Image (tube, rainbow over the protein chains, first blue to last red):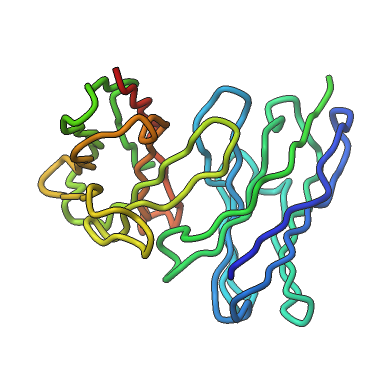
Length: 118
Length: 108
């Protein structure tokens, strides 16, 4: 059974940093791309970053490019999102998702809430 | 960047057919994926690559894609289908993945 468990969310002041983690199990982690998607309170889904299985190709949405860094440790079956220079508009639930063929997200974690206070 | 347009809401009576559209420029040339999200829960993939269903998703859920519109069709709608639905594509020109704004399905 595929399981994805996010952690690392919390309350942070504007300008601060957080690192999110996503622990994966139930599939061959290194064989799949992974993605971070966020959802601001009462809003829709927003793709923010992706990484291929080997970790050598990364992708970012414009609102987070230069501030967020996606990475993975295939030896630990864990995905990360380093978030720097946080802004109030980064407040959201952050989901990690297993990604098939770089195209679609077939399994999702339950999400972790990041709140940025201004 | 590529834009996907969904109606904010769709309402349907139980047992009827719901159709949720996703508009985009020449979207028929792209693969479209659909997600269901119930309140307080993570999204669930219900259709991928325009019309394929993951295991465990009822046959009542189907998809189509042509021209400038992709459609998620839910047949014999049940109260449990009430949720937000999102379409998504891969914009290969920017390497960004894009979501539509979401459609709230209400079962009357």
